[in-house]
Image 1 (cartoon, rainbow, N blue to C red):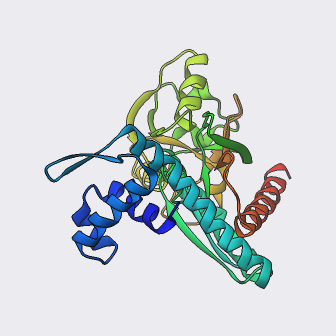
Image 2 (cartoon, rainbow, N blue to C red):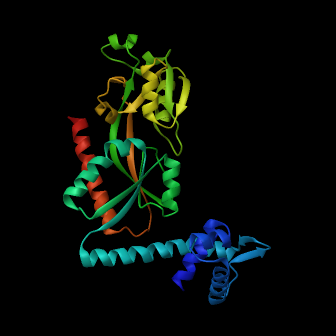
Length: 303
């Protein structure tokens, strides 16, 4: 199979038209149309149902698109692996992660990489779990770091870090006077909770803990980012729960954090990768360093 033609076919599918694909490939439309026709002749299948200017994938075209992306990924990774074998570990690793990972883990990993393996370049895309899953499945990233639970046959998940949830209270809140705070003490509070975009997350654990304590939380805000919620807490808008890594923000503009005595709530950061996808030496090295950093953080939490 001609890999150049395969790349052009995939670009046509992703751009949605010959014209847009030709522009993206920096070529004119007629040669690209001829190339796609020759590709179909080579394979002896019709890849598109053609109706005027509209292109619709046939069943064979859909199959080739899905399999072809994996084939090109293997081809590209083989080329990178050859360079690594010849020159040592070097190259680019593409990471998708949630905000807390980008704030508290990635900087330490980058520092360790610069010390140990300076020829690795890290590209990071930040977003919610659904975004990271989509990027992983489209082969746009190599590794994902998420906080929600992901259960899917094509995804391999491993726990990177487990940490307690802490309670953020507004300044001068009456609960500051208590030596020990329990979930039951929060029955009359306004809750600011993170949106769960995929699987189960912090909000689900908090709601379940409240219901087990005999009440349904009064949720007044749902959002995708924790830092804005902490600023809202400072303004007295309500309370929120955050992973204990946020206690390392020593800012007068953010609230102090208190542990919950009962029940103790935990949250997990997880590494997600595609099953059966080749992992380059660069990705393996990044993953190993990330696990080292996470283990060091866990030791701090357990002290």
